Image 1 (cartoon, one colour):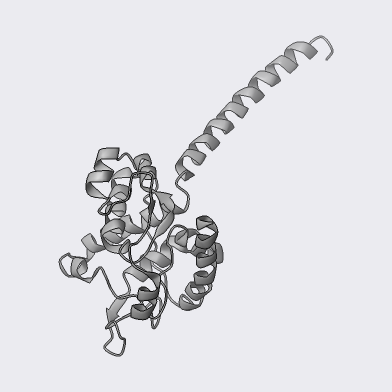
Image 2: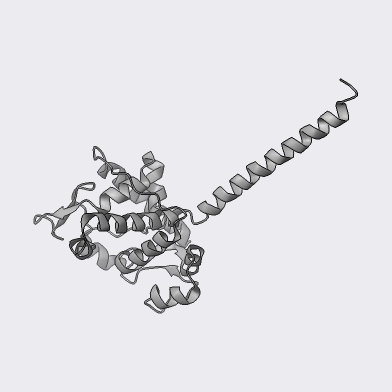
Length: 222
């Protein structure tokens, strides 16, 4: 049931993202796949800056061990509530309060990168551009607007971090965060790619052996 609700929220939110990105130049997001150090940092950023409003109920804390983290590291550095290692990443905020404060219920982010990618293949690029596109706008209730999502209800929760860093360092942090959002959409993507290469290699060896046997069996016929 939780997965069904997550998918429904993503499907409802994805059209808004597609509309918001129309005509906006998207910057290329750095590829963090397979970079466990960057993905671990992205997990830290997500827990510290995103989880206060956004859940990621499709992922459990224990899944973060696939990024090279130990159970002790996760419990000591990434779980700040009474949740357990087997609990999903869920926000403590009440949805009715969030809707009252921001004008819209913050979506679950478990599949946000895949939902955006299903529209036009720019999931990571859109998120990377969006998270770096906030600017001051006193006409908005939050005091912020976004170049990629006009009239966005979300405030710029990363502004203190941005102000304390040079642009290159901030872009690196955003790249790590986006990489983690992409990873959450398919945590087993790396394993799938490795299995794919292994299967192709196996089939290649099998073909070579089969061809050699064929030549051996039919050598007296030709």
